[in-house]
Structures are given as structure tokens and as C-alpha cells.
Amino acid sequence: VAPSYNGVAITEQSLVYIGVKGDACLDGVVGLEDASAVLSYYANIGASLPAAFTDDPTSDYEVLAYFLADVTTESKAGVNSDAGNIGLDDASHILTYYAYVGASIDAQWQEIIPSLKTLPGSLWEYKANNA
Image (cartoon, rainbow, N blue to C red; front, side, top):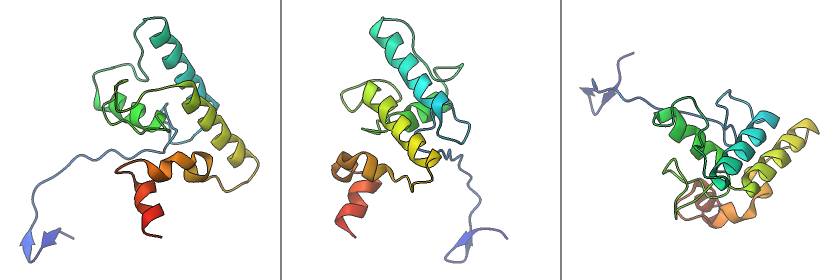
């Protein structure tokens, strides 16, 4: 089926990246490896060493991994900035999510991190204000 809008064929294409919140390793699963990757990133920054989640810190995958790993502030910059940063709290929340899933508890990020409900421009804020 060819896509169209108002009867006009759409020929443009876009590359869209989709990920799982908390999945710093980009393997599609939130697990211990992701918390470990966040801790390593945080430690490298603290030691003034290069920090990256992927083999190419300039790639779109790096920006995606950073966004998914930054579970508390969801920074879209792809690096630590005033808009958000990778911290110990991100690793802790990822471990909490992983523990919930392991215990067969319905893991919901907005319950693990209540501040998401007031994060400006986030899906969580939208859902909280339009429930």
C-alpha cells in the first residue's frame, strides 16, 4: 500500500529510531547491562575521560542511547547539558525497572520516577494532564 495524504501520494522518506526507555545498550531490553553502561558513562565523565554508549560517539545511535539512558530528564542533546545529564539516579531507576520486571510487577516509568509527570514537553506530562 502506497502512503498518501488527502489523495496525494507521499514519496518522502524518513529514518525513525525507536527504542526502549532505559535501554542504554540498544539491545531492546532493559537490564543489568544498561545500568552498568550508565554507571560507566557517569564514572568516565567524573574522571574527565571520554564517555559514550556506542562505538561511535558522533552517531545518531549514540544520541538515541543517551536519550534512552537518561531516564530522569530525557535530554535530547545526546550529551550532558543544562537540559539533562546522565547520573547515578538514572542507573538506580533502571535497576528498579529491571527488578520490577524480574518480579513480574507491571513496571511503569512514571511510577518509578514520579517527576516525569511534570517534565515539560514529555509524554508523561501530557498523560498526567490529559488523563
